[in-house]
Length: 203
Length: 88
Image 1: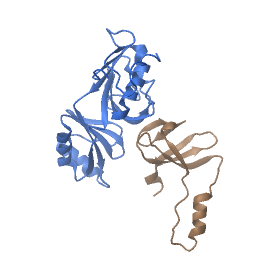
Image 2: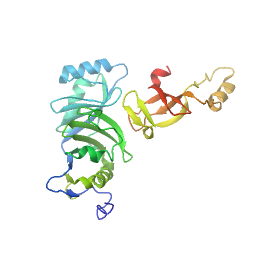
Image 3: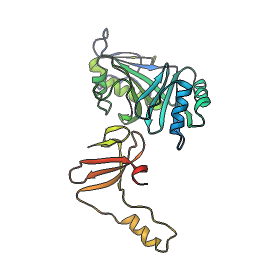
Image 4: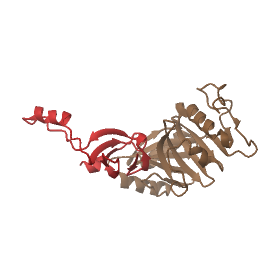
């Protein structure tokens, strides 16, 4: 499969289309998700309790200080480190940050990351098998389940990954400038299962 | 070798960077014997065959410094803790 992407510029996203066998029933799909706003939330020193209370009061979310997803509706807090979360929500970045700022500014430092990462969903019956070739985590359902998250590195690219459901579907936040390399590594490894790429237009 | 990060869980050693012995503490630069103390702090290291407390940085994960108890003969990890808690 080494020549699979040889005609595509290495600096461009992998173009939309199907790679490998079974176009009618792809083993997995890699979809670039648009319209998701991102911000990092870092608890101020000694303010972990105040932050958890503020998140509960403002958003009704019981914030978990662990590599887990705490969410309600479309607002999710993904644990990336002790006292640190990646907060995602639909809509405009400015509105997302303003909403967090209004509720959490006293207890946490907030940084808009919406233009820093590309969100890529990977889902389908063979998603786990394909990601086993890329992600240095044990993705067995007994170890990594819906609601679990991890900050790690795949193909030497630092990223955050969390599981959305037991289809299984995984969501990746990949540093934007590394997204072409991430998609190439994913498609090269996943092509044996048949992988459909969408949301990247012509690359 | 895999290291159980207190936050992230069991992770491959490639996610971590190794610093070395966790025991040396920075001496007081104002003390009268500061030059000798800094010489020892910078240069003198034990090289034990067996359990050792070491500093590791989880750069590809939670980006926290850890103190890892590792047996240098077998690479068995005997325990891990955040450096902020283990060295305070």
